[in-house]
Image (cartoon, rainbow, N blue to C red; front, side, top):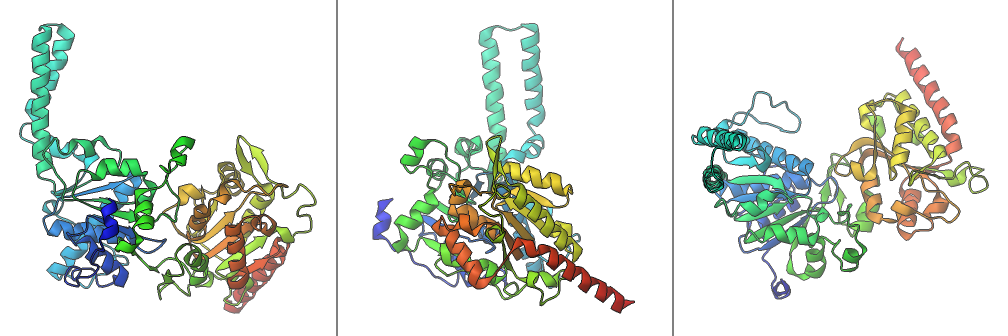
Length: 505
């Protein structure tokens, strides 16, 4: 692999990405372009939050399929695999509609009930865990089933010798393998998890991928990634190592850097080889929410799309445009409360090896009630926190299943219009625990589209350089309020709503 140090891969060939969707931006097209370059054994596509990396992956797979390449698509979890499969089918459908000129069609905004992939469109795309139907449709399946029943009867009746039993079992296994070879031979694109035994069995069934594409590659350990990619001459790694990595518990493994993903190592060690394409435009967050993430993790290269850069809370509810709580980036700073540090009212507590903070939970509920009062839909509110016990406390206090309350780790890959974040940690030693992982904070902040509300103490944040930089960004770009002022804001908003109601009568 160190030969990469001597190689600088060619970046651009406009002919390769001409079939991309019209709404793809320049770096998305570049990523597709590079992925189709057969001279690249490795390519890393880094997709910061909201940049559409899975859509890019799907378009790459679609175009590779069109070129009759065999593609193995892997991901560390079933959720990620299913997501990649879903987006790939949508990309194929989108292209089919475009080719047939049925309509000018915006796939993200229009209903697709009347557009369906035909069976022939999906015959050569499959999830490895759902091949049962294809096996059952094989002409030899009835013989396989009968053979299985005969073997079961042999076990029950003890009617054959051990030698004969062994011969029948081997014959049945050969029949099963022959069926599997026929089923796999018909597949052009296969989706499965990185740890699936299918990856190791593909060569046994005569299926050899031309290229392997791994989604969420930054969440995969390097050994697990190598075990998969040795089965193909080319590999594309898609993900973002500046978000949460895979969990490695072994201290010995961490000391040997085995917690570092192959994607991160390639980007860091071979940065002079054009091995990375950074998707640099996001379509999720208001630009003020994005700013800290862009500057702190992506060298200031991440930009907000025109459609989202100025979006605000007032666009989706009755919050007045000029109100203090219509800011995209807000902190309710508990350090401004009079009893901060002087009493235990704001201190965290340990519960079952986790942490809770009752004061912050009450502030979460108070701000949630303000959002409800101005008509924010419950489905548009997410509450996240680093600690499971704080999740359970807030869920109990709100007692509404429509509101999404999760840990930061569980909410990675998701987004919401408004995100309220409870820091939880508040102690004399200023120990930060999970908050010391800067990538966890990157995930937390970048889940929000229109408003991110951080509830915590600047006194705690000043202990850590990363949290301190976030605090400074909120100081300069957003607004910091004393939580004690929430009551007056709630009264102001209620007076405004009453006035509007009177004017409408």
